Every structure is written in structure tokens, then in C-alpha cells.
Amino acid sequence: MHAYWDEGPTNVSLNTICQRAGVSKPSVYREFGNDDGLTCAALENYAQCVLAQVLGVIGGAGSFTNKVTEIARLAAEDVAHERGCLFVKMRAVKPQLGDQTQALIAEMESMAINAYTDLLAQGRASGAWTGTTPIALGAQYLHAQIGLALDHRARGEDPKAVFALALSVLLDPKD
Image 1 (cartoon, rainbow, N blue to C red):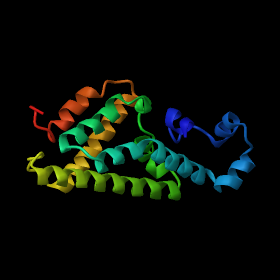
Image 2 (spheres, rainbow, N blue to C red):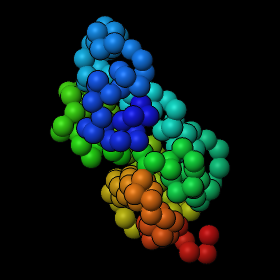
Image 3 (tube, rainbow, N blue to C red):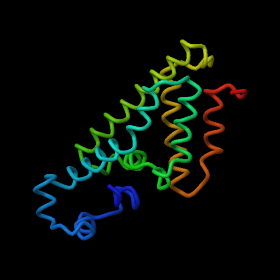
Image 4 (tube, rainbow, N blue to C red):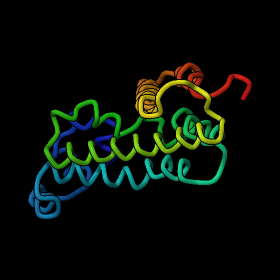
């Protein structure tokens, strides 16, 4: 997972991963089936370790404003995202990955957009989000902006400016 995360999912070979892990290539194939199985397992592990935090914020207690702010904080400031986001990196090279990993990326993307849709629906229902953007479009926008900020972070740029602009569509400036 860390090799794919640090170097990019298409920039690290299975041989390199085997050398770093101190395992043989046949043992990797026995455990994961093929390169695609290994890549998919790495992304599943990442989802359990990192992306679960975002879904926990959305599904947890708190106001719309607090949830959006916490999601932004996780992406912009959390130590886990200093190298960017493995999901964002894999999504960027999705056509170059195996079928199993592509299916998981699509599933995770759908899960994220559904979670953002629920968040925006809650915000609209509570009156905390008064924007006129359709909820489904707003969810896609939020998903894209978080990915953009994580990409900026992976390049060593400060994503706070990206978030200030991105979240201005969702949050009232006085919040």
C-alpha cells in the first residue's frame, strides 16, 4: 500500500514490492492471484485505514458546517494525507489498472458520492446549506474538490487555498 501510495500505483513494480517486503513473487501470486489482486488489496486496506475516517465524519454526529469543515481539515491537514490520497492516485490512472481494481475504484467512488449526497441533503434539510446547486451535482463537486486538494497536497502545495475556494460554494462565509 505504501509503495503504491508513495510512488504512484503504476510507478512501482511487483519485483520492487517483493524486494521491500522480503517475499518471493510466487508467494505474492499465491496470496493475491496476480498484480491486480495485490493492487486491489492495497486499495482495500487504504480504504479501511484512511477513507473510513471521511465516511465516519459524514455519518457521525455534528452539524453540516462542522462535518464539511472536518472533511476539509482531514484532507488539508491530516498527517495521513501528506503524500496525497492513494484512492485519488489510483482513480487518475484507472484505465491502466486491472479489472478488479477498476471495479473497486468505481465502487468506492459511488460510495463517496452517495455519502456526499447524504451530507448535502442533510445540510439542505437543516437549512445549513442554502445553495441552489442540485444536491447530486453538489456531491460530485465536493468529491472533485477534495480530490483536487489532495492532489495539491501530494505535490507539496498548500491545499488550504483550494479548500477556501472550493468550500465557499458550500459554506456561508460567516460560518
